Image 1 (cartoon, rainbow, N blue to C red):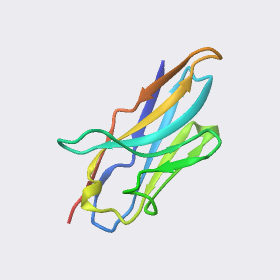
Image 2: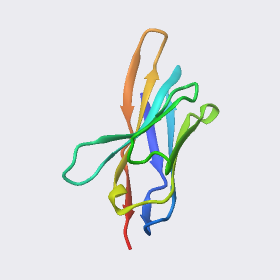
Image 3: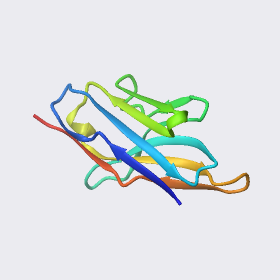
Image 4: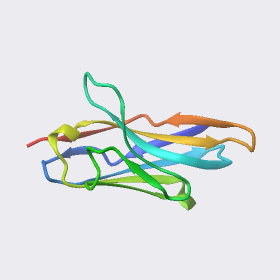
Length: 120
């Protein structure tokens, strides 16, 4: 069993910053790609950013230049630094990880989500 635990959400003023963290634990053989997704009320869940085990990153156009994804492989943790936040960034943010449980089995996992609200 693998758990992803997110932290760092909250209420922030427009133009402010937040840093999200997601720590993976459990029966992990290897962590592959990790990423952040978000879902606003009444909308589909959308990709925010992803990062490979080697550090290659990918961003949604809407956050490029404002958000930075990073990871600490020794701590099995992925981060999302969010700067210049806008009200349209308000959503529940979910961590996702592709986990190798063994040499022969990979499985995807989601965190429980953390609320980010950008409002004055």
